[in-house]
Length: 554
Image (tube, rainbow, N blue to C red; front, side, top):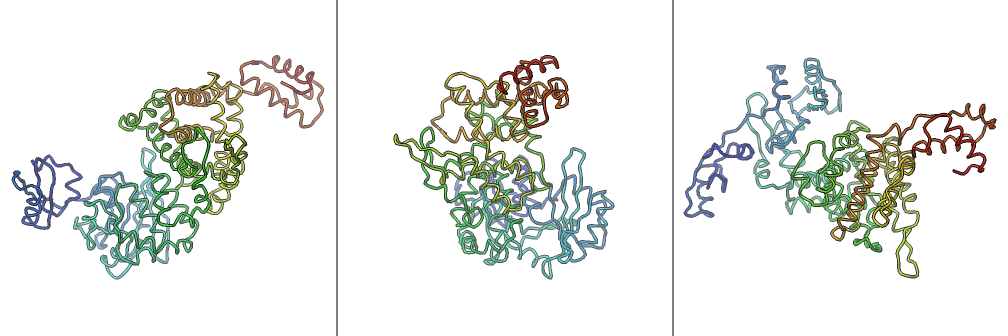
């Protein structure tokens, strides 16, 4: 029966005795007797099977390749998140290795043998990285660090969380777990290595929140208290480090839960000081939430939408929500294209997907400052998009985002309402967006328009949430399909029609004078061309003469 155990059970209970009832682990212990006595507390009469889970070697193709080139005279240990994720059978592309001394030199020699790129990360602290490019386009990162302390145990005890303080001798397969990290993995528990863990590095607060959300673990009560006590120290960490942890959080599972956790810890005003102002700002129907709760709902629905439209089809993700199931039927054909769009890396650490979530977090940031109440009681937020874009960019600058990221962020917040205009016309009057409207949308937003479509769908779900009708959602999906179809299937006719005339043509053929009127006429020609109303040079010239005759009106 023990042969039928899930492989993850074998890893989680490696080196322990387990008691099984009907093929399920119901108790474990350091000895056979301990496992039996514990099991009998729950199953007094059931037949039990007791077996020992041997310590398993940590394996992956990258590690198997690395073993071929290890020098014999150096002790080396796989540590940290790589061990944690391999035990949990999660995909691993970042591997951390600890060596007594000489990590920089070892990494440099191994990089040459593996054909990887070598980067000294911190020469003073003996830390270096190897980047390996895989055949499928993915990358593996191998970080090598000298012991922090005079021994492996001292190194492990000085880490952040116990689940990251487990090591495996890379040569012998021996496990080192001085703080009970494997037990915490089994208990699905986040626990600090020491009371001073978060004071030593306050950014570990964000890491603990991110891991709890990503793994679905609970944070131990004492650890939570230590985190809260260290929150005032967060401003001592660099904006770059804050940014990197925040973006990993937004790009990972349950970003809405992460924001709630940061808020409960008191960290939100220190990291993203604009966000608390959203609380309690009420909105008119069809909104059913205040602005803060709505923003959290946008994050939640955006995650669900992107999971349902992920490049690898996941039937569970697609069918877990009726509205997302309908979306997959309408938009599923674009999942590979959307995956490529969201996977675009502005920097090696930050993707378009992560930036989209940051834009979602800030899309309504100026609603508190633009809120007005009309005589009939309707609440309006005139200009919140434009002002919000500037506020979001200021926060992006504070977090040291790149110029390309800031440009994309500004577009996403500034134009996030445009889709809703077309969705409303479709829902109320059955009017689909015209080709000219689609052209103008992408003319103003470029490739960011794809992210805007996804943001708008999440925004629509979060606005009405459980009160949204299938008819209203279908209208939004029709508009999304029209926009995506134009961008991916008809770019040469609707998005970027070939230029029929140049400025020189207008000067020569129509005797126009240089000036801004030339540019306005050329754009009018392209709009009309995108609308499918003209297709040749002669038709473009005829349109231009009519445009001039009407005084520049289309």
